[in-house]
Length: 90
Image (cartoon, rainbow, N blue to C red; front, side, top):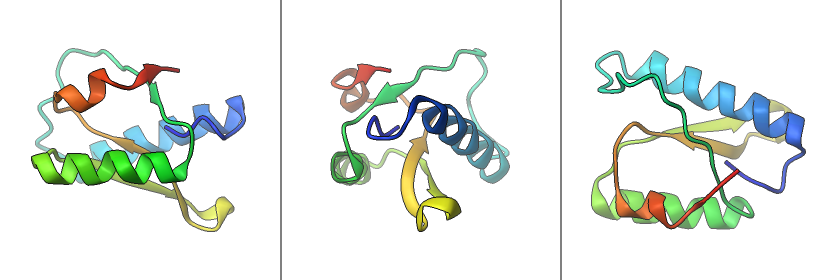
């Protein structure tokens, strides 16, 4: 999730990203009931993370916020990858 959003926007965008993931991933492997929120500084950094995930074949869902000109504000995934370990908790 992008840290350049306000705290309330971050909360809403996280919810949207999770809901979008569950809607489009009915066979999701997420079963441990744990949510971990990781942050990136900006849209550009989020796009860089997405490129790395694509390179490694990690599946994720993008959330684009209609009220923010359809910018990508968050992504969600239930896969493990070392890329996520490099990101900081929100």
